[in-house]
Length: 76
Image (cartoon, rainbow, N blue to C red; front, side, top):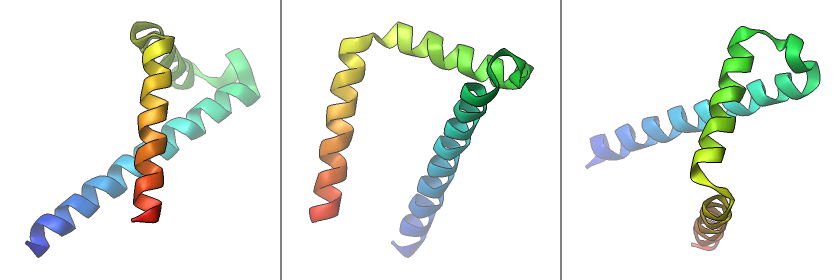
């Protein structure tokens, strides 16, 4: 059981690192704009496409669910 918990913790840390990396790339795009580089532009383009595909109503629903999960973890 400890192995499962340690693997789960490792995956959660990797996912959090990925989120921070994507947020950092978006920050670079906000600061530098179109001169930020090919990789940054491709990541931002993919994020924009994903957001357009999901739709604004679904994004609001996902944000509400994530906020509720965060509140439940903090109080639990």
